[in-house]
Image (cartoon, rainbow, N blue to C red; front, side, top):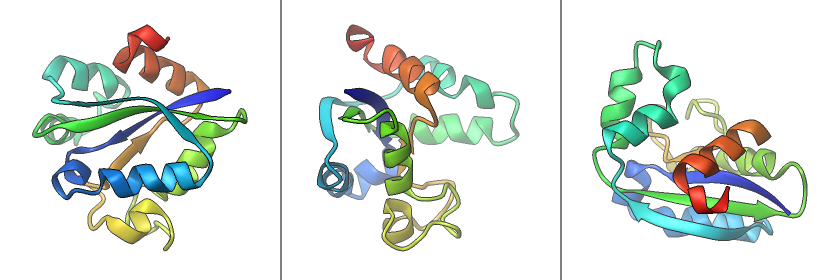
Length: 137
């Protein structure tokens, strides 16, 4: 089994969409192996988004992800491409490019608050799982 990290961001939790997001993941044939609703502190947010620290939107991103709880999850699938399956379900980062049928295409209204995060490869999945769920790493 192959695992990846997924997060329902504050806007998804605030709008009550976490259940719908989980349902889409499960309908695809993937399963949750860990989930935790948690308030993200600044330290965790900065470590999670460390690769974006030089971007002009970094401060806004940290403020957004720490404003209210997120639902952090580890998702498991039968193939090496579990992370890619989740990314396809999520849709393009920009809501203008997110296809209908994807989570963002159907439910997100702005790119800055696009509901969900998913690891972008096996290396980031391993690192994010270790950061958010160290007992599973």
